[in-house]
Length: 234
Image (cartoon, rainbow, N blue to C red; front, side):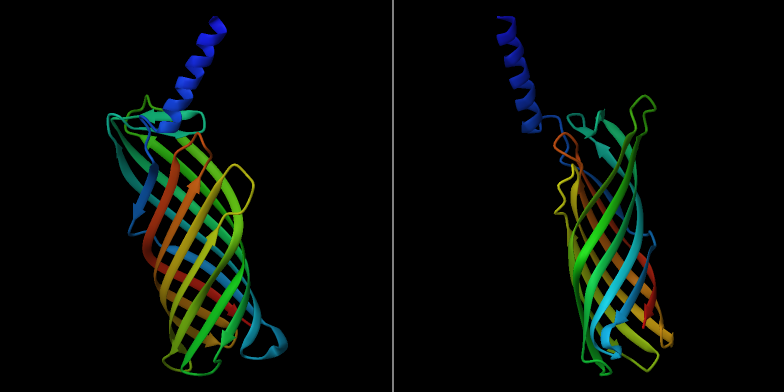
């Protein structure tokens, strides 16, 4: 009889967890003023100005923002949780490295186009603090890897200056406990003071999602703001 009651209690607890009762679907950051930075190197195969190439890019985004939990909401990260009502302050850093095949079309013309495809590795570090010092701190550091791809359009304004719009996306295919995806959009002015050097500055938006497992709340980071890129082309 005791075993039967134990099984019923476990089934009820599992059903409550799966139903999401008392849970929030997402911890989220919406930051519209954080700077973003990246570095990118492209090597053209065969020595030509266009055609095939290998691209390596590393980037870092940091965002922060508040979130209010209502009375019936609870956020989970691993073994820690915070129940509402609670005022939370989130901080997150998203770092990414990508190895890509890059192909340049229409080299030397007024309008150029690059498309790229390859693989990415992404690391997200997350921290949530409650205004109530008695609440636990929610901490998580997760990584995932998967395919990546995108395109860049370039309008040449002069021999040294160009307007560029770039989109890239990546998604998880790893078998680890964490999974996620990321999308980046950039609109920049590119200044090329030397044949191998490109300095980019403008505006960008980065959207990242991380799912830390079945027992944790999904994490979302959306950052928009000034963007800078150091590029090398050879």
